[in-house]
Length: 276
Image 1 (cartoon, rainbow, N blue to C red):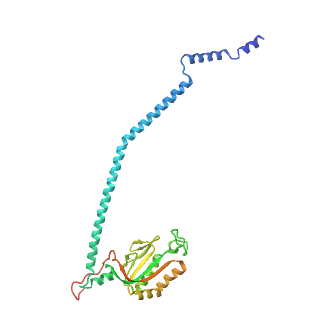
Image 2: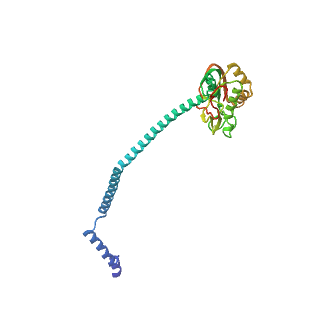
């Protein structure tokens, strides 16, 4: 019984009891409570975070003037380049006008014939009776290429194509037109109507529908001959079969601008009568 009593009274080994007593003694004499240690660790973390924020703000304050200066320099460069581009554009306009005047002088063959030459060459603005022809895309046509003429791209959509305008212009010339323009773009013997992607180009200038074609000539004769020509029937077939919208009307006075430039390659002005 004494052994059982001793086991019950001393459940832990004496060594464990001594170690526990030492830890308690150390905690009471010099150790810090856990709550205090946690507070100290939190304080140290806050101090470090504040230090990082302070250093970052100081660096931002130091670099801000540099960034502002670089931005101002970039703005000044942009403004300077814009001003230089404006001056170059003015110079180009002046040179273009000078070239235009010189070309008109080169086209003068003899006194009194310069106006006629300018009309035929397209270098002079003209006005007179004629017809106004409007050609527009089908209502069902859209930018995605879907339309009554198919879905395989620009060449088969319900939009007006370069070859359609080519046939219209050639038909008007053949029907007696003396001067033709498309959307204010005067056509000459050297004009080209081409396609670039989905855009129609006239002398490398992109045009957008609806296309307004003005033709100066005998308005009644010009209108009748064009509508009865193969090109006029082709345009009518586009309207009936594919929904391309067209309209033609006669006018007493149409005004066509001069071509922006007329290139003279081989012609030279006559120096004396009877010679060339």
